Image (cartoon, rainbow, N blue to C red; front, side, top):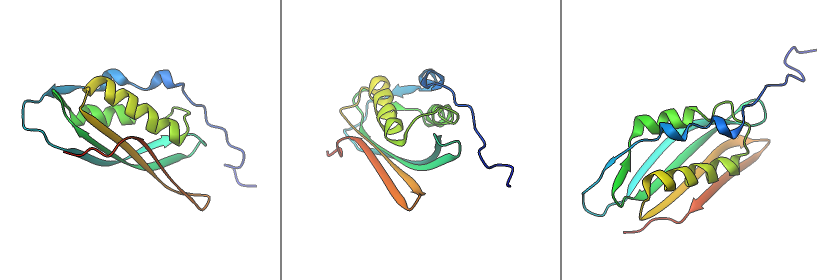
Length: 127
C-alpha cells in the first residue's frame, strides 16, 4: 500500500489569510484599466490547487503594491478553503483595501477530476 494513501493534512483557518500584507500606493493618473495575471496555490483537499488568478480593476485613488499581493496569496497556502470561497475572499479583501471604481476577480483552476472550474466575483471593468 502506498504511504501517501489516506494521508491527512492539517489546515489553518481563514484567520491565517494575511490581509494586513496588502499595501496600496497613491494613484493620480488618468482613468485606466489595470490587469494582474498570476498563478497561486490554494488548497483544500490536502493537495494544492493551482489557480490562474486574474484581477482587473479601475483605480479610484490607489493601486495594489504587487509584492504585497504575492505575500497575501502565499498566506492562503495552508488554509482549508474551497475554490469559490477563495475567489470571493480575494474580491472582498481587494475591494476593501483598494476601494476601486470597478473590480473583477477571476480564478481559473487547473483541471481536477476531469472538471475545469472558473469562478468570478465582480463585473468586467470597462472604461
